[in-house]
Length: 344
Length: 259
Image (cartoon, rainbow over all chains, first blue to last red; front, side):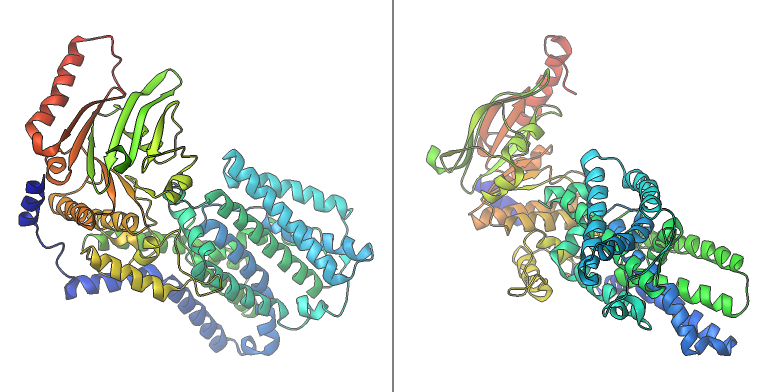
């Protein structure tokens, strides 16, 4: 057998030629495409911003910036929540209804005499429990999360209407109301904070790379020893708590808790923002910053069209085109990546 | 002799309902040895590998690691005992760069924080790849962009550097071109040269087995029917072994055809 080794050594050929300039270029190009989703959506946001600023003087006013920030904040946080779930290979259709339910949990907490901060924490835990249920139902039964969370969507819709008797309530006020959502730009600042924290979670922690692994290659991730079910359930809980938080923040900002706030529309805007920002519905890839920027684009677009006096119907038409176009872009980028592989 | 075996199994049996996958398998793997495992599709190779990795529990029989009887409760249990598997699908994550795949489940973090120390992982991955003479365009490249051979090489290198004592390679050369196969065979020789790791390699290409393995075992109908050092066998003999089984199957009907 030593003979065969020596024989092999004689036949040994260079492992692989070192990457020449052409290969390096191909790689640089494909890497750029792989990572440029954030850059391209940032570019779109800037272009829209500049366009509306140049064409409509009122657009740049502080008051209008506030409106944009209000349009953006909740959608951005929901987009970040959905992005983490989509990357892990799941989706949560009930986030918009968790958003509506959570402020009521807070409300009943304060009604029972709890201080607001305690009520907020308990409400967020309540939201987390819903996320936990979504996650456990999904991973334990193998039923797609599209179905389990669709069930949760209707359940929560009825639940929130029941506990509220179908009427809005006044939001509790306290010293921390301003921090939570009352102060100017509070919601937007929270969205930015959430973006930074969840981005770090996704890119710089084990949890983040296990999330990518879980969505990108579930079998391989399991073989590598990653507990994919735990990762998925954890992201359901995270998403639900983020949705609950922005629901509370928004309720405090408008000083009213509405059982019909948020809902499917807000949830779908969140998913749209995540997808426009470059998160793949198939799982395994996506960015938190992209999700945030996707929400900014939607917010600027919506506000800009209103300021310009264009019908809100048009907004939906443009939104629809945006979503489809960004899906095509995603597909084209993947196609290009595969072609680049041949040069590798 | 037996005490020197990195892994040894005696009388392994496993059935799935009415289907008997393994009847009575005894197999041994010496320290630093490379064992080629051959056998037709459905002969039970995958079942055997899955028992050795703790994925399946045998219905009968006993496993020994370094001469000590053990029960592998799970894949992570087996991994903790130093048995590492490179599956056919490689368990690589396409959307993560090479260096993160290299350190998957063994990530380095900055001291006392949950934050990944990517610089340290990059350095480590670079060192290890160059130690194994594996060339890739960049340590930051997403694995999706690599060729099949490069992906396989990274999966093998990951197993080698996981402090594994035993590495199970499940068809490492499947669907690979001539040049890429040579890269992987060189890599397996490199593993052998290091001497501290034992390897069981499933393969269908007998020339490659004879080329790189120390010993070859044939698994047929849930039994090891052939165990020989590669020095005393040949590609022709191995081919003839499988071919004769195929010819016999044509006449005999008491053995159900494997799936």
